[in-house]
Image 1 (cartoon, rainbow, N blue to C red):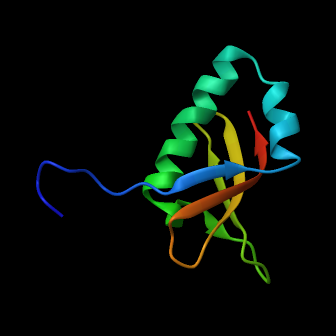
Image 2 (image 1 turned 90 degrees about the vertical axis):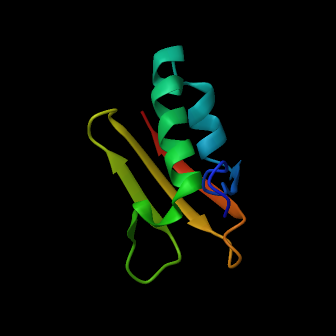
Length: 85
């Protein structure tokens, strides 16, 4: 990776029920969630593994958000299954 380029981000896709919850968030909550999604897209290993599944659970106590997601095998797509903000 050349010095002028940052880490490669994965594409983020939200599925139900994440989309339903997203529609209920305020502008401030959406802004906080956006920061978490960007962090996860750059480093999908941020969350902790959910035992017995492919899911990862990322909780940011400072921004008060939680994202449950999984990453495709080539790490090019992050699929968000659940959000809290």
